[in-house]
Image (cartoon, rainbow, N blue to C red):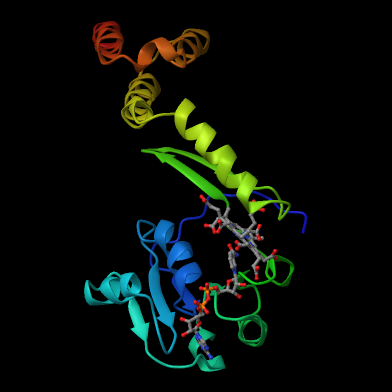
Length: 203
Ligand SMILES: C[C@@]1(CC(=O)O)c2cc3[nH]c(cc4nc(cc5[nH]c(cc(n2)[C@H]1CCC(=O)O)[C@@](C)(CC(=O)O)[C@@H]5CCC(=O)O)C(CC(=O)O)=C4CCC(=O)O)c(CCC(=O)O)c3CC(=O)O
Ligand SMILES: NC(=O)C1=CN([C@@H]2O[C@H](COP(=O)(O)OP(=O)(O)OC[C@H]3O[C@@H](n4cnc5c(N)ncnc54)[C@H](O)[C@@H]3O)[C@@H](O)[C@H]2O)C=CC1
């Protein structure tokens, strides 16, 4: 499927996961911090999904999926076996986002491999060519964009907010915004120096 990458706000949206095996468990993982209302419909679930249900991080409906379970879905993840996935996908509302784990072409969304460093998100998709290659490329990116990038994003955010509030000329603002994208500013002491200079300049 020709696909378009997009960041989605899932807060308070109904996300229904049909099936509770290891693949459902893997798809649920990045959704846990999305603010979505997660419901798993499956007669059996993995111990990790059961634990999430106990912790009230998701709702578990302990049953075979039926059309009524997905009628309010904003996003359906069909993660049971092939036949069930197809049947339940047909019951989803029009315009529902659908991820079909047994046949990507039968849904309208695909999970990328994800690197997260605070506000930085890097998503890798191979368009169904090779999920294992997506994983390998993700691992390479994890080494390049390592843990300090999370804190660095907070610094960039702070700089940008300060500049937005300033009455600096556009050209000067852009000069600052360019300057701080240099990896030199991954170092907290360099960040401090920039923030001090900016605060003086803008006060
Ligand atoms: C289309 C897509 C739709 C979707 O599921 O969203 C899809 C579809 C399918 N995957 C299958 C198999 C495998 N998927 C993985 C792994 C991952 N699969 C992921 C995404 C996607 N998988 C979407 C495309 C993304 C892209 O193309 O880049 C990742 C990136 C994200 C995630 O799952 O979170 C995650 C790695 C994440 C990470 O490590 O970070 C492994 C590797 C392993 O498990 O070791 C295998 C076994 C090896 C193999 O088959 O290649 C099968 C056959 C099922 C069967 O055999 O029945 C189908 C069905 C089909 O081909 O249509
Ligand atoms: N997209 C991907 O990344 C990948 C997809 N797959 C595919 O994912 C699918 C699921 O894989 P696993 O989790 O390993 O399988 P699994 O067999 O361990 O899990 C299936 C789950 O579906 C539940 N289930 C069975 N009947 C149901 C019904 N009527 N309604 C609701 N739930 C029902 C079962 O209780 C179980 O929890 C397989 O079809 C496999 O081919 C496999 C590897 C990767």
